[in-house]
Image (tube, rainbow, N blue to C red; front, side):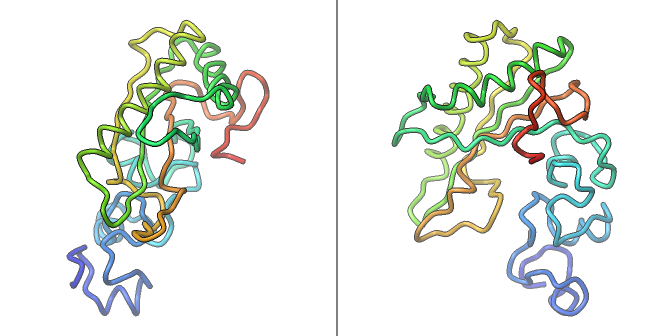
Length: 204
């Protein structure tokens, strides 16, 4: 078991077609072995139930069933471009964030977790990127509070740096898909529509 994920290399190559050198072949946050033996999810499918949220997030963060699409939280995925080493949200992204505010205001009992994620390169600092991604998530939270009057206690901001990539990091050139802000809304239902009748980006 070269990558120490709970599956031996032969099983990875011949049975599950996973990567024996990558403990999390589909970058969903769960190692391949637990996906097969514990959670019975597909180690080659980041979102086994197709509900919109990665298997690992369902298991580790949300407490939902990665094999049941009906209980997935509502996810908005934003690719906000910040200036280098900055955490100021540019006006061009206000519209996307305003859609999220409409969902939260339409559902007064709902809450949201705003996650900042960074892209990893060869010389990237884990500590620096974690702090920067948290600052950027906090900036989105602050905009939601100031622009829509949403109560602070309903919004939480966290930064994961490059510890939770969505796709394989490109250590030389970078991979912009990993540089993102994800907003998970609990208590807003799963109708897939926001207050303006638009489809959340993750569900397009």
